[in-house]
Length: 98
Image 1 (cartoon, rainbow, N blue to C red):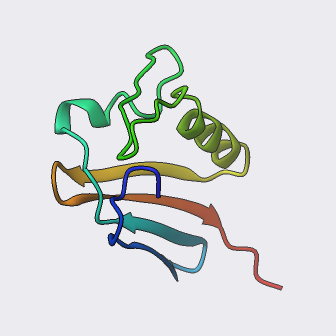
Image 2 (cartoon, one colour):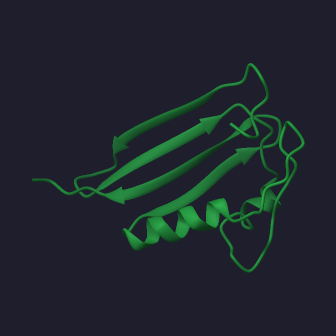
């Protein structure tokens, strides 16, 4: 939401990838991210932050916290993006069938 302009959209979806994993996607119609910056998003040793649509600057820790939490639950997280076309953040979690 922070990087999506007024009137833009944020969409969440979830679906099973297979019998063992669930994939969740959060897609926006926001600013997008340059390809060379995508690899910096989930690294704790690189502080990467940009100005939001309202001019706020983040700490760069939010996605690192998400990655850490997901990995502790045997999941993965990654991002796909194009400048001016928005971003999609995807993550997986194991499915536990009862």
